[in-house]
Picture: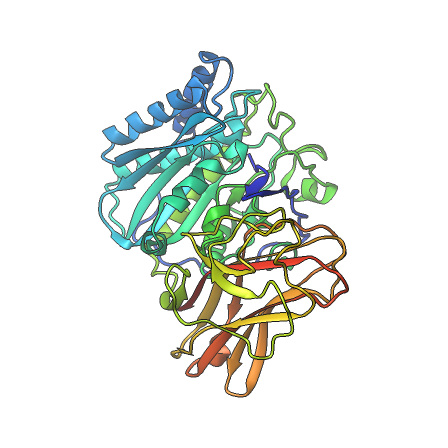
Amino acid sequence: MRAPLVLGAAALTLGLAAVPARAVPVASAPAALAAAPDISLTNVKAHLTQLQSIATANGGNRAHGRPGYLASVTYVKNLLDAAGFTTRQQSFTYNGATGYNLIADWPGGDTANTLMVGGHLDSVTAGPGINDNGSGSAGILEVALAVSRASFQPDRHLRFAWWGAEELGLRGSTAYVNSLTAAQRREITGYLNFDMIGSPNPGYFLYDGDNSDGTGAGPGPAGSAQIEQTLAAYFTSIGVPTRGTDFDGRSDYGPFIANGIPAGGIFTGAEGRKTAAQVQLWGGTASTFDPCYHASCDTTANINDTALDRNSDAIAYAVWNLAAAPPAGTTVWEDDFETVKGWTAGTSDTATAGRFERGDPGATTSQLGTTVSGTFDLVTGAAAGSSAGANDVDGGVTTILSPSITLPTGTLTLSFSWYLSHLNNASSADYFRVRVVSGSTTTTVFTQPASATDRAAAWASGSANLSSFAGQTVRLSVEAADASTASLVEAAVDNVKITRS
């Protein structure tokens, strides 16, 4: 769907990212265990025909809580069971209705180095959802069946997923990620997301894992660039240019990148309009990528066969190549704050209230009562208080420092989940930042200034290259400042990790 992202007590709706006017840089793809198969367009379209028939027989849609959705899950599950997958139907509840995720594991491979491939299976209530997201669901399904037909046995473990209730705010994928322990999340070393791959007036967009377009939310977690490069290499091999699309939180990769899991994927466009430059690049017309987006006309007639064929082959190429790739990185140090690891408050803080602490956060309109994982995070004043402004950062700087961390040699990446929320009485003088303290030197590696606008609390992922500190013993310093007059500022951090690659 490219759904609005809804997290915690506050809802953050993010628009379609601006498309850069240059190609994604291409790096050599990793060596494959075997050549990826050519995915049959006929087979993919046969799955779409089945999903259309299911919608037609069940009130015209396959939406969360409706019989058409469960029938869609059953259709996919039966094929995977017969193909030798181990399937699990995970249930969750949203809006008083039971939803389902379908998880399918291919036997074999290193489960401590799992590659996941997913997309949402539900539609909106207005229509059958054949492009959004029958297209991604069918492409993933046929690739999974190709894995079985080839008796593919890669080094990495393969797990496929079809998510429920994405159209209502990533509910199914969020429920899945939240159900995992920290150890189980660490085992997922890559996630591929395919949400709309057959738009009738298609573009060829790849999630911008390395932030080469320099806009929007920044790069994905360490390892996302490799996923982007692998997909880009496929499109280069068939002479199709690609462009970046931002990790804007509008699809099921959101809860994965918020937990530091590298991600990537393909997107052919939704309600946005193709520009004249994009028409020159890809053909088509200077009009909406998908004129039937979230409408009753999103039927089997609403598919571009060429895009569906190319993108299904690209999914197979990524699976066959990335399944042979080494892990995204070895964990050097991490903290999900579920146990006490020795973070200490800064000795020169000037804030008098709302100072950083490890706590179980209370929910307010400016502070999330839910963490990324578990019960605890680092938060500015954990208690909710009697008003939105209670226990926020009050008139100064608050700092909290990690215990000492001895860094090895190699390429080192810091990743973490964070948010900074504020009202329109904030300014650019207020901020959230992460710094590295090495001896008497303190270096800022991540900063997010505030502004004179309302910013709702919503988890985002951050990262920084720490390779320049290799071989040193350091401490991480997490800071937030209310340096403006009478500002309301709240901040939090969760799932801090340093990896070596």
